[in-house]
Length: 66
Image (cartoon, rainbow, N blue to C red; front, side, top):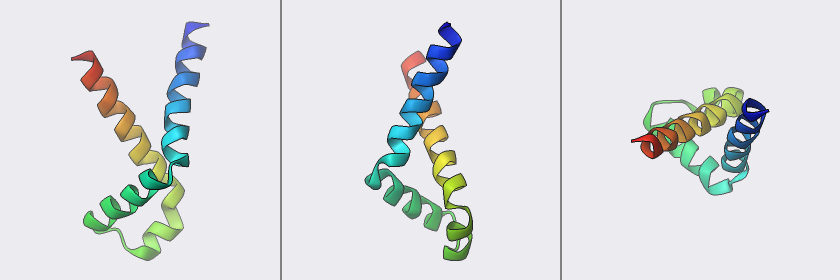
């Protein structure tokens, strides 16, 4: 049961980021700085946003452990 609760809470954190318009705007800016073209962004934005949300949560998790 604990694993299910952990998964649900981690997914909720990602969903909250994904649903946040300011976070999505930040993702666009980071992607531009990384050289992602508008065409690449439009074709893959769901994956980019989820990737950035995962990275953000991983960073927060690491900071909370240390």
